[in-house]
Length: 509
Image (cartoon, rainbow, N blue to C red):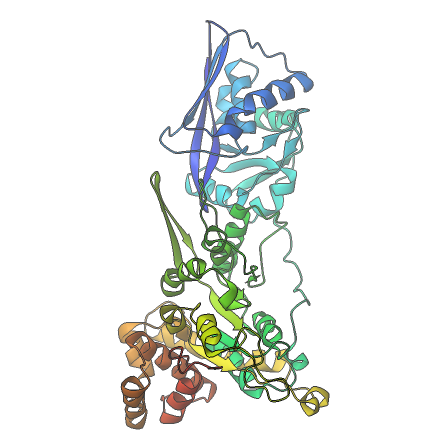
């Protein structure tokens, strides 16, 4: 007898519908699973045998049993197919009506006693179910919160295999799960009022937040670089519904246990020993990396020169295009990675370059080697570079500066002007850092004095064509903060002052 149930396979952050076809027939007793299944799926036979026995199901294994995961060309991994396979076998054995299986997505890992265990990627799977016309999803109870985020799909939480079977057969009628309320904002972020002194760095941080620009802090240890970077997320506007859903789906695919939709912009701070795959994603079965986990948020790279050069170079394409493309022999996976880069570094290996009380002892060769770990093309993609001096005693004990709430109001006003400008031009809302081509020239062309200043920068400072566009974007943001409709010479001058042109003119050299 043949029975078909529905489950989902996760590839990157995208879910694909999988038809689990179970067939029982007379013949030499044998269990065969086909459809490019990995070892975790092939081992499900032992889990399902034990679960059926402990749950009291009298299933006959003295037959030829074949389970096919279609489409057969799609490689499948993980333990999310356990529930669909077990239910399909019961239907093929005549213990469950095959008509009851249609229209329901079944996801979950089986314990040996029949308990359902959570699996990663339930949110993308539920989104796929809605797109494929499935109106019911039965998932493990710990996954029910994230699955219920999706409108248009009734989500039922099951604790065990018998509960799931009863729901499918119609003998149990539980209430559909509802999405949990959004979590309250976290108070773990740094308030700008805690950052003493560093007027120029605070200004650069506000500009970066207002326009979505990449920023680099250069200064000695203890100058406040990490504090400034951690103060950036609270300055940004809250996630929109679509951004929150996309961000939550990425974290779900990565394996984060979620109780509901993510409301705060991600702040990812990987250690400098992170590998290329950890930073941008990869693996035999590609998974999201830190660049994708920082989508719609901040990717903070502390001690920037200490990262592997190959890992940093792998960030160049995502910084430009907002996506990570992982190409393998078996196929190509694209994952979103539209993040805002915040980075920090010392001016030299010892970190004391420019100090008078404790002078730097690094040789010119050591300084050049240290700066050379960051390539010119990567620096060219950083819009703002700020040099932080060592703090004096008077600055440490002086009055605090503006707090996060005050600066965030100005940032929100600037972002609102950018949204209105984009919508008025018939374009989707976008911050200044994403302005391109004709759109950039239409809203960010400076006055004649500003043009002359840019000409001198390209002639004498080595400003590249990409750098020219990025200076215009930053200047447009500065003009927005200044409530100016036009980009004037003073806006261009400040943008150039904050620009890291190359390693000979970058801060700290």
